[in-house]
Image (cartoon, rainbow, N blue to C red; front, side, top):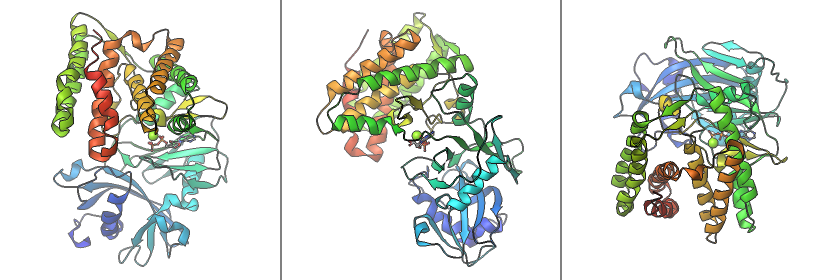
Length: 459
Ligand SMILES: Nc1ncnc2c1ncn2[C@@H]1O[C@H](COP(=O)(O)OP(=O)(O)O)[C@@H](O)[C@H]1O
Ligand SMILES: [Mg+2]
C-alpha cells in the first residue's frame, strides 16, 4: 500500500506503487516470478509527454523490492507509462489501473507501448537524437530515420517488448535492464563495423544515465531494420515438419550463417586461447550446474555419472595440453533467434545472451561450440514437438548444420566430439531444469538427449 512507501519515494512512483505491485508480476517479461513485490525505488523518471495533454507519457526505471533479496539488489525494469483520462476499448489489454491520488489523480495509466502515439514519440526522439532528462537517444552515423512511420506493438510472446514502425524498423525495448555494455547492442554494432550482413545493423538506440548513479549507463533499447516478411526458424521448422518435409537444406544455410557470424566476431572482438587454467572454471561451472540440476530434478539421478563423464573427458583433454580458441558468441542461439527473409537469406538476432546470467559472464569469450550446441539442441526440440517421432529429421538437420558450418570455417564441429558433447550436455541439463520448473510436459525432450549424452562417450 502507498503508506508503506519510504518517504524518499517520489510522488509519481508513490502513487503508482500499489498498481504496479499488482500489474508488474503479471507481465510475461517479469523475471522475479514467485516472490511478491513489496515496493519500488526509483532509478530515473522522465516525462516524455505532459500528463495534462490528451495522452501523457512517463518513462520510469524502477528497482523492485522482493524480500529476502536486499532492496539494492532488486531487478531494474523499464516502464513506459501512458496517461489518459479514460482508455479506449482497444487499449484495454494495456491497462495498469486508475490512479486515486498523487500527481496523476483521476487518470488511467497503461502500458504505453500498446498505443501508437506514445510509441511514435520514442522513434521521433531517436530520429532527432534527443536528450531528455536522463534519457539519451542516439543514432548511428549515416543512418537516417524517415519521420511519420506508424507504430504497432509486436504481440509475439517475447522476453522484451518490440515495436514495429511502418514495416521499416523494429525497436526492441529491454524490460529488465542492467548498467553496463549490453551485448544486444555491442555485438550487432561490432558486426556492422565488420561488414557482416547476417545480423541487422543497429540504426539507433537509447540509453539512460541516471543522475543518482554517476557514471552508470543503461542500454534501454535498440532500433534496427525490420526484416519484412521474415519467418523465424522455429516456426519454419515446425511448418516443414507438419508437411513431412526435410529441413536439411535450411539447416545447412543456418550452419553457414552461424559460421559467418562467428568468423566476423572473432575478427571484430577479442579472442583468447583456452588452455588448462582457463578451461577449468568453465568445466567447474558445468559440473556445478549438473549437481544443482540433479538436486532439483530427481529424474536426472540415474544419468549423473554418465553426464559428469562428458565434463571430465573435456578436463582430461585440457590436462593433456589441448587448447581451444574462445571468442564472443551469440550465447543463446536456437531456431527462434534466426529469421529467414523471403529471399532465403538467414539473419541471427537477439544477442542478449542468457538474460538470467550476469552481464560480465555473458560478455566473456567462449568456445563457438556453445552456440552450435544450442542449435543442435533446437533441431531436436523441433523434431520432438512434431506429432510423429522425427529422430531421422533431427539427425539430418544436425549433420547438415555442421556441414554448412564447416563450409565457411573449414572446421566441422563434429571433429571435436568431446568439446561438442560437453556443451550439448550443459545445454540439455539446463533444459531439464527449465522444463521441470515451467513445462513438465516437455521434460521428455531434454531427458531423451540426456540419455543419449550420458551413454555416448566418444573417447
Ligand atoms: N530485424 C527484425 N525483423 C523482423 N522481425 C524481427 C526483427 N528482430 C526481431 N524480430 C521479431 O521480434 C521477435 C523478438 O525479438 P528478439 O530480439 O528475439 O527479442 P526477445 O529478447 O524478446 O526474445 C523475434 O522473434 C522476431 O519475430
Ligand atoms: Mg529472442
